[in-house]
Image (cartoon, rainbow, N blue to C red; front, side, top):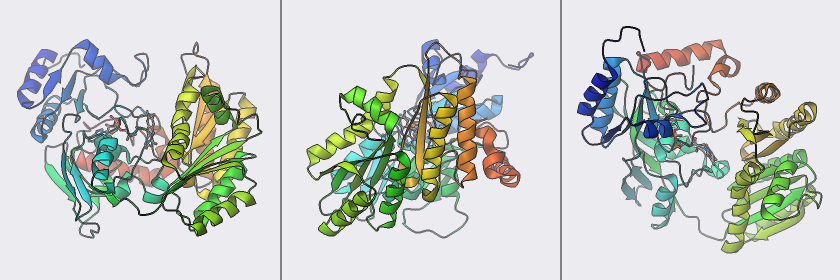
Length: 466
Ligand SMILES: Cc1cc2nc3c(=O)[nH]c(=O)nc-3n(C[C@H](O)[C@H](O)[C@H](O)COP(=O)(O)OP(=O)(O)OC[C@H]3O[C@@H](n4cnc5c(N)ncnc54)[C@H](O)[C@@H]3O)c2cc1C
């Protein structure tokens, strides 16, 4: 707060409450703490907000932004708060705006193969509603049971099916946004193709709440494919071999809808969690895969690749129950690692497929060099790896060695032509890597775009490009 504030907090809150007519303004300590800190209250990146607002209409959003402009306050859009990159934490004197009450599925249109939804709709709810009509919503982040379309759009969330159906960006046709100056704009269309004007829809998708607040989204829905699906589980001697098999499957014309790889450490964690013994059988890497329409020909092609890369203990599952069991194993992975105890950090690099063996071998090298166990799993079919590093709970601060490992991982990903963020976005965690990943010119251009749309820098400051 400035030394000579023009307004008291009470005056600001009173003004804010006048603007929010359909929603609710919260200022109690408990609510503010719950919505300000995704990690813990000692994390200096986050701070207690001034107010948490559950908006009930787009007019409420305009009212909050009007308040923010008048009093020069930061505005933090928030959905389910499952961001892994400190994307929606409180700032000092900020207004946290939740769009969770805007949770209607406005339309599911079978003829146009689209749905129009509000940002507060949970990803899985949209998918389930679409399935009742023979359609489905493809983007499936691991957090799909909790995360919402607003957060998914703002982070360009990916998931297991990205390997076939793309990220959120590939599945969104249009969005309605309230800009920081209060203008209400419609970006994109209901059509599957659009070539008119600059493509601002795709600029706003993945902009992490730094350019405006999304209040409506038009998404693609896919017809559920006809035919039988098949899931499978296979083990390899090590991650580089598994990565080579993944590359071969991607090249083969099989169009898998899931290609998830887990390393030996992750298998061990799952063994402990599920009382299995895959690690003891000598498995150095595990592949969980799915093809959504399988034929004899595609099954034979898949088996030939698995054989070529000496896969062992191969399970092929066509029955729904068995498929569910394999899927559950993938879902259990994070819980299994977290159950080992201690503090952790999970990273999110994505590299060209040909570089996946190099990247995973490098992770093993760092593990030996620094003596910290690194659990590697991820949407490997996209070249996306999520190394998770654990350290003892007593050490509250991230150990310097872990920071160094992450810095080296980022540099390696960039060196081999990849990115330091495949899907979790940038948040406050990685903004300082802009020049490294984008270069000076593009960094500047991104700041120019930001200041054009948000000249007062009220929208989610310090995130994305800071
Ligand atoms: C167990 C677990 C698994 C995960 N798996 C995946 C995965 O497979 N793939 C993946 O991509 N991510 C994954 N994530 C990360 C996270 O779930 C995604 O980033 C998700 O898209 C965030 O959605 P949310 O509703 O929680 O948004 P929040 O975390 O609340 O917000 C995320 C960002 O969106 C902005 N935002 C929120 N709502 C709006 C709005 N209405 N308008 C404008 N900006 C807004 C926020 O300011 C913030 O920058 C995972 C997280 C967890 C905890």
